Length: 267
Image (cartoon, rainbow, N blue to C red):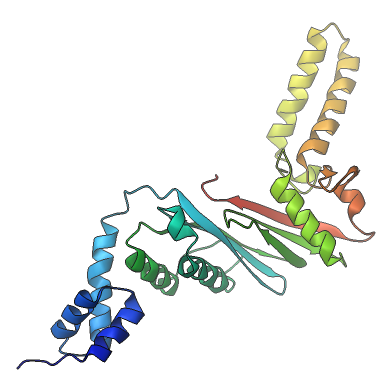
């Protein structure tokens, strides 16, 4: 029996999948006019084609952030071209993934089947190797975020206490812009092995210059303190007022509990 496919059904399937009219009509014919079955059929066929393209370089992408109460998520989604990474549909998909991840436990974000389906919709529509690169769910205090205008760099900072919104934004921008990028909130968060290596290198250098061991140790401690000022968020000079550290900018009784800085293609 010949199935008559209404143009309206073809258009509806095209709107749902972003696929070409001929592909949509063929899928409807194969599915005997069943729109839901045709959509499933089309997605399975095209997803198979897309899975064969995962070896293509995905050097572009965007950062997306989601916040709900004390919870935050920051993720990176990759694409092949800058054109796609700037596309509204791509960025909306990234935001949807971030929002979906708010329901996960603290730590690395895992892609659920629903999240994968959402991403696959854009993969199929664009024909590009689009993938979820990484993400993290954080909790505690009051999160605030900053995403650079090009979408390729994003920051989340969690605050404890009543920090004015303007300052919260400023500290997020500090994390985004400052060189060097802070390694930790404060000295306690800097990896112990890195601190030990810095201390040992400084002491060896001082002793090599002829300083007695006791003096060399004091010089080493001074250099370690200087190192903390350079690599900890609270110890760094605030990017918008280099006469004060980030710690000095914070109102009394407030603190930063966590931060993350994510760049497309970064480690």
